[in-house]
Length: 115
Length: 109
Image 1 (cartoon, rainbow over the protein chains, first blue to last red):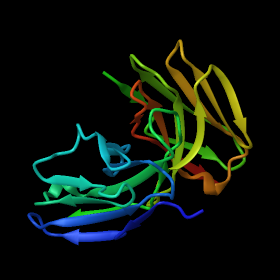
Image 2: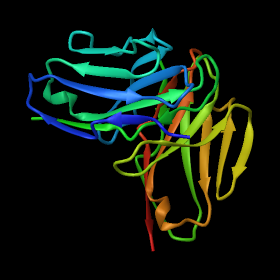
Image 3: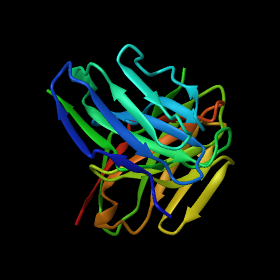
């Protein structure tokens, strides 16, 4: 079974530039999560999708971050414009469904450096 | 509010046993997860506890006490490859994970 795929693996941009990350969850997983993990901290949930609908985006900085999962499969996360404090690893995870205690499977992450 | 506490760093010797503690505070609880995260890699699932007691899985065991808001991860027969961060995460009433900052475990020969 293929795992969660993410690209790119690494990205370096200057502040005020834009960047987009892509995620392909495990086939059949209805729930998709985007997390931000700053070095030395645990993951912080940015947004959760159930199929193509948003379940929770309360911690997403909506003035600069956006995410979509148009067909209920792949998802993209965009930052525009980037700030220095956005330097982090962006993890995508998927689970079979929401509302139950399914484990989450993580992709390898995208390490973003904003200079 | 919800707060997950675990030690920042621990050191142990190869072949020994180590216990990593985690405390949580929440008004809703749907289970406690432990994940392992090697440096530069994604977290991988280790264990899930929702009932009190000890769950054993090979060299790793996880314990939960709901009344005390307490869990621990026990690693036996430590190997060098066990050097990693161990993340405690509580599943809240909305079935979302609230993550601790992780415990960095250093294994020395």
